[in-house]
Length: 113
Image 1: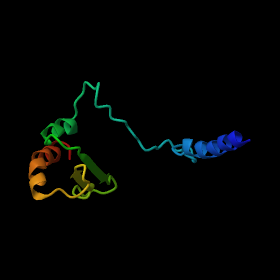
Image 2 (image 1 turned 180 degrees about the vertical axis):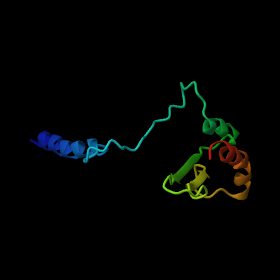
Image 3 (image 1 turned 90 degrees about the vertical axis):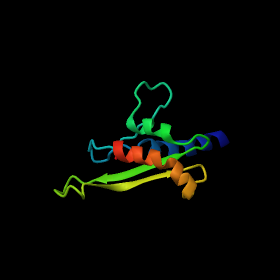
């Protein structure tokens, strides 16, 4: 009986979450999620090439979040967002570390953004 209640509880949680990306209105618009496979990929994109400029010895988190507004004719208001780089400390980079990652930031700004 104890095992049955665990299965029932697991099923009650699993079923709603498995349909979380399914549209209830029949709209085919979905959020695209893509897993990036670093090993085994023969194509090296611009962002991946820029990461070669990051100093060795640290693990970096790169965050690019943007909004593209295609409802306006204003070219400046079309794309807004933020670009952040942090290391494993998850804190703002100090002056020395910011200077070390500057070539990476310039590369991303020029080739990706």
